[in-house]
Length: 486
Image 1 (cartoon, rainbow, N blue to C red):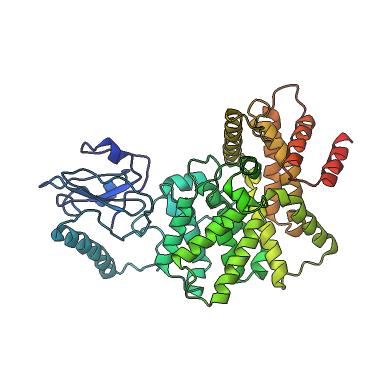
Image 2 (tube, helix red, strand yellow):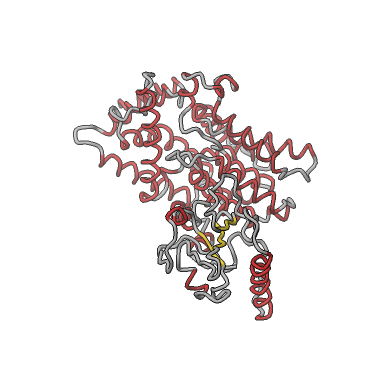
């Protein structure tokens, strides 16, 4: 089966309705094609969303990147629906299609498979994450998924907005977790798609691309020598699932906003780790809905849910000082024993916290994009608060803050202390690379600050905002201010 993925070229040899062109990546079959007689599949693969029409009744059958089958007849195209799943090669027609068309489609699939077998082409990977005929950039990028320079934005474009599904599936497969835990492929696909769809793409920052980025960063940390030698397969499964779901169904506003607007989530979770509790419960809901772990003993599936919650709750930025102090104490006393399950779980918590806020430690080209996106989301919340005459949350006032000032404060008082302790725990080439990028990125933002504003002055102003958000304890904030004055 030839899939036309999103590539830079878009030549179409026939006029196609505008609402079809707006769809994400399509493939077509028709009796006049050279799959059944039309252009060569290799030519089709160079096109983005190629559509062919049947010569007899102008019927076009095509498949979106997300796997839905759409049939165009005299009544037009079926509108796009939510809840589509990327089961490549799975067909669920919306309209009744003639039996001959369906036979033609499936006979073509059988022809492709049998011709490969006859030519002696081996199946290199029994779990096809991307279609085996797709040999474009996305598949090549997955071969370097462990690189700290991995461009998640490019990967998301190449997968037509499905970076979280493809990346997480690939990693679960690469670690051998699908086979080890006997995960049902259909259930796993459905779970990952539901996870991706429950992220709000209208959020500039807290969306599925951010979740994919955190998952990729988590993969990099799991490969660090100390963790790779100590973590069990169960730990790795938890770490990847927690990274993929850690901001599930994020509304694009922070906890103080939900509390002061009397949002039902704030009341439900009693104003404590409101968003993180919601992310966790949403993830558990999808696990149960898809029955991903239904084949495991009840005690094991409940244990997965509990430990998944413990990891996600650790990403609450208002509890940063609590986890950082505990991590520092362990390192000072040198009593972290990764042979103990509780200590391994705590290190996973710290790894997820690092992955969640690692954007300032990425190369400038990537870090800058993330900084702009998160600040855009902050400022959007501030605009809502202004509109409804609410007190503007710290860091959310576009008139009082700049992207540079927000980032300098965040790097100085949140990112640098956390990664300084992480380097003490795992002093590797990756850790040094992250610190190097962090220093360069901070210098770059300082250079973008308006003239006359001192970097330390900017950082101190942002510290007051971070303290107001509860990111740091008062005693630590006072200590930092004293250091700043010195």
